[in-house]
Length: 466
Image 1 (cartoon, rainbow, N blue to C red):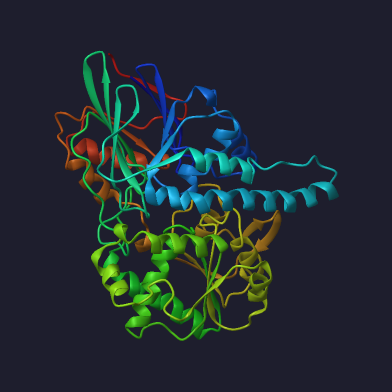
Image 2: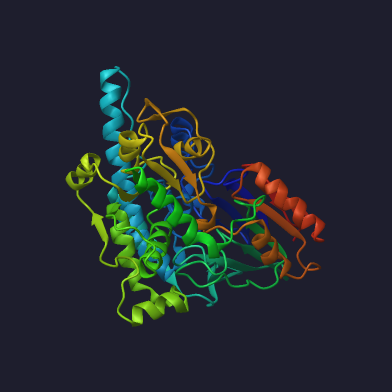
């Protein structure tokens, strides 16, 4: 058996790992790499393998950095099945079409500038028809059910608690009379987070591929999440400003709305309009409503009482471009939630461009911002940032609430691995984390008695004798 780490190696985007055994080649995730525009396009466009030689894809969840390059894989010749949970299938059905749409619109915008500068045009990575083919290849599978993905490879999903439908994957590989159990976190969630059930244990494995997004950080307590948010909102409103929230349309937007719902329920949410400016968020929220089997007891209790945790009478979902543009002229306190989560595309860019210069406003960061993204530059509070290629002075407040993270922190990652048999677990590979974060988690796991912890570089292979 051979593992090759082809994405999200010493970075947090573009998750993609290749498992080869028994003559079969299985891809774990196929995500978009996000970062510097030219580098991102090059890495996403060209796969380091022949797509037609991949037998199957096992998808951990629907976030774009894990699923977003599937249509390009299909366009490049992949014909096999894509295995995912049923909720992940339904989320991909809205997310991948939205991704294709955004790419087409962004390319149009960029090409207008290219024409003015006599530069060659650029093309989108894939088109809606490529998404059509991709969706026809996705096979929805339930949690805790064994299924065969290739000869000698049995897979089982358990709930990762990260986003609706997210899964920790267990792969049992039988090769030359030997059985090896491989585990892959995808993205691991946190206990007691709003909406979703807690992460489930995967059981004992021989090899474990773990994310390390927050491998060097312990999050703020979840219990204080509402109070911190209420403080940010109140001080922004007191100075007559808007709260601008970049948020992933899948998971982060719904979590944020649910916390606003609880604040409203307890009388702590100021009376201001709330706008979700993202057609994708509208559609994915509907998918959330279709899958209450993924919800924890608390939110299901609200639903049984005919309450709407994603609306509560104060939320306006914005679909049209015209209504989105009207928000730029809204000269009153409000909360605007828009995607994309890392500020690399979508309507959030327009809201930032129109509000970043005004100290009354707050840019509220509630998710991870990968290195080199606009979101990361905002977290660093760089005095000037570029939006659509134009410089903008950062004068708005930037507030960062790490308690909203849906990724496990260092202590939670360590605790998840600690539940496994140390004698059986021979190899741990840390991926989906910047190098410093992965190194800190490696140190923690080594100190806890796990002797073989490795941080692979992109393209690195790990071979295990037959």
